[in-house]
Length: 228
Image 1 (cartoon, one colour):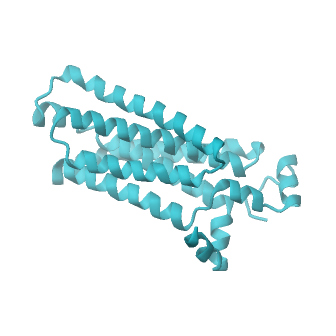
Image 2 (cartoon, rainbow, N blue to C red):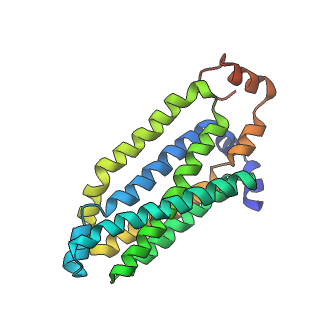
């Protein structure tokens, strides 16, 4: 991509883009975004469905089921595409685009079927994002480091679960569904911008690691996280 070539001509930016710690940090952020988007509607879903749309509470379970269906679709499709075509970042960009689309659908949601569509699309984005963020850290970090790496990533997931419903409730009180939807759109666009600017494809990162450094990583004699 032209943008990649231009950014790599700036040494500090190139170092950031080629750093596996950047992949780690962005994976943590992307899981935070994924869980945050999901949890934004948790506290408000009964009010949206029962008060605003006059839907029986017995239909609430179907909403969660549609999210799960979307996750299955997103994870399987992203796994196939990333392995078959040997690309990671392009598939990650798909997640950002789908988050944005989900936010637009939610912004316009006035009927129950639109909520179902929103949840399916949100699930697809989640399936793509989670599959790829764990795949990318696995590409660039050795097995003896993955436990700690994944623990920090998952910590961001738990933080997001804790604050997402509270933020969603406040946004809903201030601006209704459109307030939450606007934030979802903004987070999707943020993910796209970060992927286009400071995130390099993890397979490219893996190939750029010096051979001696890579051997040290594989042998477990280089446990520190600093770049070589």
